[in-house]
Image 1 (tube, rainbow, N blue to C red):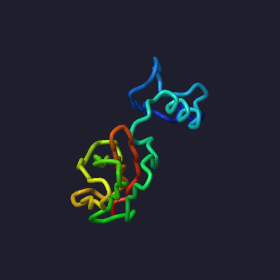
Image 2: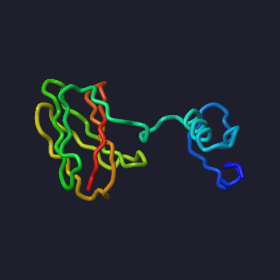
Image 3: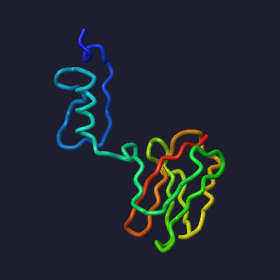
Image 4: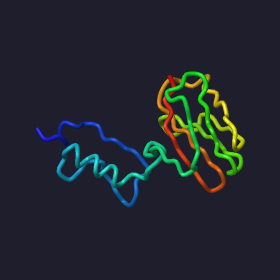
Length: 132
């Protein structure tokens, strides 16, 4: 039985680009399905990997339990720290001064993988953080 016939559930992830009307691929295979899905879905927070456009930016320890330290480089100005959960929802936002180690409180966060965005002016760096 082809893969497409076994899959009874239609998955809708969005927003979809263009006029894609179906999440099933032409040949019905799982790889083609994923390729179609990736090609037709706008990349969101889940597609963000570690980027470090801010030289000297550090996030440690990783994994962390209660507090993670963010070191914002000297001379770049204050940074906005944004923590996103695995679904891309903002769970915490704070300001951190440049040139200092900032204690990022993790209390109240469910264990899992989070994305920490550090924005200084027009520059944005992202790093994954595992909260235990």
